Length: 405
Image (cartoon, rainbow, N blue to C red; front, side, top):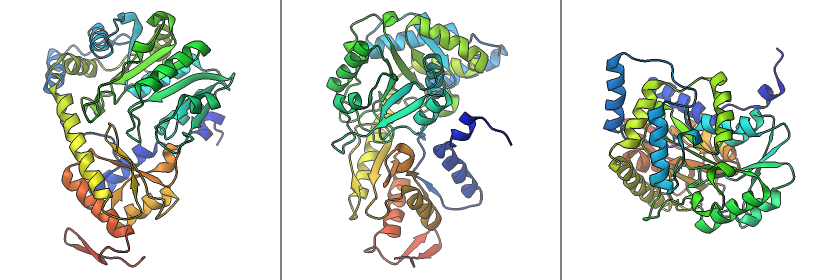
């Protein structure tokens, strides 16, 4: 079979593969605990459901403009004003089939083969593959101090004449690290001086803990939106627990949005009108659901951290936000892929290998589940790894005997 160079270079999405594995095992009746999934379990906002249902009842389910329906673009304009304190035009906005598509279309609009895209590591698993899909070169950079918080010096160290864009995801998937206002200010200034595109992946920007406030990169922008190379990415999936609705957006200068719209028009056309209506309902509706989700996640994170600190050999850094803990298990196995499959095989706990995020020896654990799932999941992991744990464990009525330590 003859395949393209790009086709041969792209790996499958590990997170989606894990979701598929969990579904298959559960269908077989296996007592799986999924600590890998980045999907809140709370229901979508009622305002979103009612808006979608109203449109469905009308029977007017038609094609939409490639860049989104006017009502959604206006809702995003309002959202940008409320959350970022910057007034933009609908011409600065494109709605896409999820934040992932918004990033992908942006990259397709700005990258040429051999251009480089820099992003801090650990990173979201799709960044390198999306860059490679454009024929460009991903350039991850680990902070020199060994923390999850990059410095401007870390970023500048790997930038070259080929650097076309920098991607910043804060709070970060997988670490939950929220970068400081000083760092965001420095990165905005750096990109302005170098004429580099700055893609701010803000999909988790309202899911932050300890009474922190979201940071608006517009606060540090010295030019107008239409004169800048700043691209803001967001969506409804995380903050509104609307992962299956697949509505995201980008806010950028209108010339870039025009090009992105042209690409999207040939790629997928506009997103579903029903799902866009639901997104309008969520954005314009009562926002207490976001606060409620954030409070739940913060409590779940505290419980998970307490559980992780209960056995030796594990190093866990408290997240500033999101619904992930990125945990160092290298004491037990430096190969995170082998460790993840071991835990799935022995105790039916799904985790995501840190190798997929650019840092081996770690596992990403999700706090989206119930407190029962979190406590039982960590208990199973501890039993499988910690030689000080009892030799037997019951999962439901099934008795497991540990014979590998």
